[in-house]
Length: 547
Image (cartoon, rainbow, N blue to C red; front, top):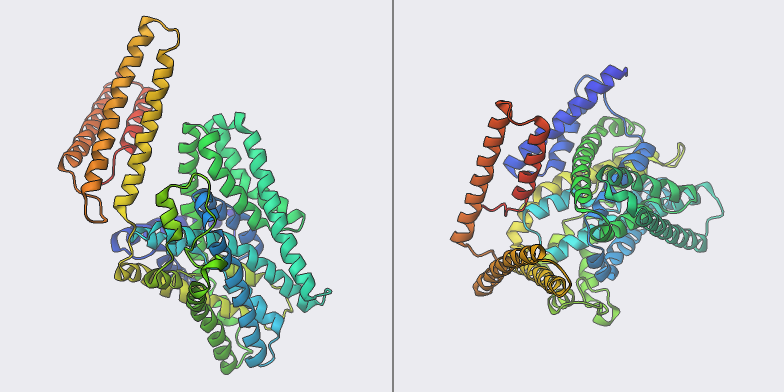
């Protein structure tokens, strides 16, 4: 493919991603499923087709996607639910791999345990992108979002390590159970160490991160440095990326400037949007390739292999969730169950931690196991000559398709049918309590400043600031009173508040129109317009979108 053709191909893919997002926003259908179906449709049309290169996916696409997901996750919430997350991202992945391996060795003609375990490792880790995108639109509770995020961040490392062990077993490289455990432990521990080391280095670069452009450059380089650094010493690159992202995201409010955070967040949203869209298109385009590879297999063999793979993937997850719920509380593996008390926990956060998942939450979690590109990239890394390689490709692709399209299209309606929604009242109360505490801290700081030596001009500035802060504190306390009086879990309506938002938006629009008239009349330069527009943009971002 010539450079001009490649450019046109990429531009067409970008156009499709944007168009599908527009359709998704207006129909409520998940973009991931629509893009995958679009990729399948395109694959059977005449013209160039993109082949999945596993090394390219694992090196250039997975690190930034995982890193951005880690930046948006809560290290505190994941740590609070760590035993639950490990149960899903390690225990369930291992169980899925072994069960599919056993099923293949027993019932698929000519298949080996190593081949089945390799397939099981590839299809075991859910890709939470589709489930989270739909779940957030449907108002999925925060505790379920945390579990899906934590599982999705950590399960790839488990799966890829098991896949490596399965390939080593096939190649006869001194494989024993002890060696397998040792490889897994060393890979995981090494990945964690590399991730922590990179986060520490990024923290040392704090002087450079005050400049938004430098902060962006460091942020974009971080996932690739973590992945390549870890893989170069043969430890888990994906775990290094995740650990680095979690720590850096946790530290960002302390070490990054406001301008850097705003710009870095915008850049990562764009990268995430484009990469996810291209990945799902790429998944759909692989269908002709994997189907063409099946010519040498009997239909009965394909059906049995598919039945085992889909059966384990779809049935083991809900069974695992139910059994984990039934474990004794003292084992601390009950989903949403009690964990060691953490310093600084509020009573509200302790209540959230101690509350186990109910039947509705378990059903939602069972249906949140959509698979994605990591499953295809993993299975495509199998070396040429690996037993039943083509059959494994097909089984992995069907699992991705069934979960991504089937579960992806039905997850939102299921969440709504189950009546699972985040308590918007509690979320609003938490934010307003935090705002009130922050304003009170600012007032305390003003008192300290006032006791220091200063002139009359500073006195006037302190008094003006005090009046603004006291008005803001009064506004937050009024909101809290309104929330306390509300009976439902939804946000109470405040006609005065909604009217104030509409007025502020109208005022901002009027200012923008006047600035444009000044620019068009030659009374204001474009540079001056852009600076003033940024001020209005930041003011508009502070407004509640409900208005």
